[in-house]
Image (cartoon, rainbow, N blue to C red; front, side, top):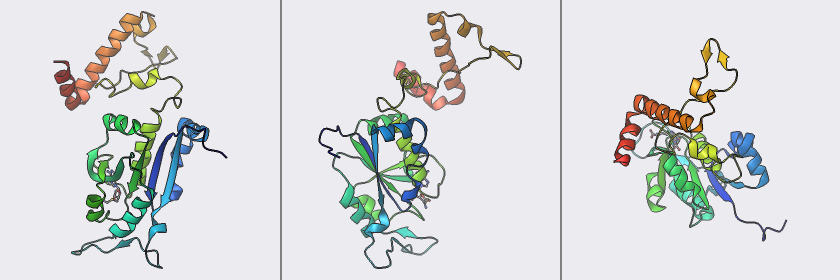
Length: 238
Ligand code: SAH
């Protein structure tokens, strides 16, 4: 098929030992439809294809001893150098990295694509991170068995911000973190459920009052649940 008239779309390049994991959950629902429609793209790269010996070895024992295996710098560098693109951020998913948040997602979404390195075993040889200037990004303060789930989470969060993926773009601007606050509570029919009624104001049809109520609820929830975000929010308003 001729590609010349096609506008390039946001593309995730994924370096992994388990390509079969992708697109996984991103093949379903809105992200899946968007992938089929060509609103975003994926390039999954098997790291093992860049192994340098006949046994296709990608890892080795840790220098200095200790448990587990470490992914080799030479193999990873060969893979990275072959696929990475200048204007794509190069990211290693790692529990030591900067914690992923919506601000970082917005930054990644503003680029043409991203190259994601998924670790396995004990992680990767430190030297490749340094020599290829790789940013480390973490999904949170817990340990996964590999970077693939973190990569999928990051990709999902970017893909849903791409125009045309989610029908109603208001959804995006109203969401938690966009305004620095957590989102207000939602309700839908039935009007009364197990003795609990939908708050009166939401049934009033008064848009101004509804907006005010939602803002108040957002503030209350954020203050109660996330003092860190709440303080940031107050400081920004000053
Ligand atoms: N020994 C490492 C953990 C290795 S877990 C440590 O203690 O820091 C194996 C791989 O899973 C890592 O190389 C990384 O790519 C991925 N991973 C694990 N936890 C992660 C997290 N919270 N965020 C992103 N990637 C993670």
